[in-house]
Length: 307
Length: 278
Image (cartoon, rainbow over the protein chains, first blue to last red):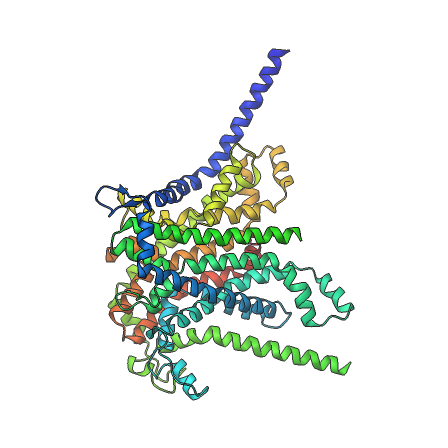
């Protein structure tokens, strides 16, 4: 009896082991690449932020000095400030427009698919190409089409756009909203399609008008979507680099303090100055900010679930 | 009754006016690009702007190939994009199957590792990653760019979310019929996951084709550079060649638009499963 049991046990164990192996064989191709080239470097980033390293000589651990140094560096402070300003404006503007578009494109109207596709064009288009057009449309010269529009239609003074330190962030924010709103629109569209028609019908029977329906059905029902969009938008805003490089970088790609952002600072410290410790320390600051935003989002979602 | 109908007509009109304004806002830069790509440099900024050039200068589209090694750049980008998209699709859908449909030791811990890294922007570890690749002798190689893009946590996460929505009973039935797990993956799961796969194709294709910072850091030899880097290089060198810049830009957009338009009908459905779950 005991022998039989242990044989069965053995058998079961063997089967479980085989099942494990099959599962691991599914995961292995992706996980190996992921572990070696993503998880590894993440750990390395932590180590490097406490070290002094130029990439060729010995790495030397120096404690928190990198962090002290970057917070004394006014280029870092400027890039932190610009990144925050950029996010503070880009996140809410993109969110509101994306929601508005999604509601508009969720109506049963002719040509809906055409409009949806068009809204997505800027998002899939390559940044270099659309930034090149944007730079020509928003050229600081008076001959630019946007400045022409300002002068002849709106009768206001032309702007220097990306060429002036007072309007460069504005130009970057406008471009960013234009380029990315289509993506968040699709996410909102998906959210809207998850709301039951019955809710609206019941509200209609109670005599609710369009605004009331929006306020008391659409907005609360979309709360999970809005959480998701906010977090994605914020993370993507803090990662911004190439938009700034294309719009505000001179012909040699150098961005000055009026438009410098965190990732640009990391790039410059690492690959132009070869101060890898400082670069990693600022990368860690970037990560800390993203992490805090994510945690706030999770807490918010929990509160929502408890409502 | 009459006023109700009138209200509806007014409402519809407002919606259409807004939509047409929107379409204009979205399309004008592209139309401008196309139009400028068919002009002499001196005519690009002539006022008023000529939307349809009277004498389109098709020569721009021929000249651009000789001004920069555009064919080489395009070939490099196409090669990288196809390999990355293929690997991403294969390895993500494969791993996601195990996470969604198989019981095994360490499943939750491994999956947590994936989810946690989604929240870590690549920019945070791009520097150590580069140093690591360089120590392996992979700096300035296409292999580095492939490795960089092919194993994303996002792909696994998205595919898993989608598979979770497919009933387990389908797999159970197939197991009883004696199908192996690999068979179930290939014959049942893959054919069912077209929307998710299409979404992943669009994202991976678009991201790899348009990637800028990765190739900028890794690729230094000109003959290895990608279209985006090449285009940016051209814009910096010949900043006044407006017509040619626009012609090259138009060309660089065509592949992503083709992929997007041919797969877009799956798109909204795919994003729903990938992102927000109630």
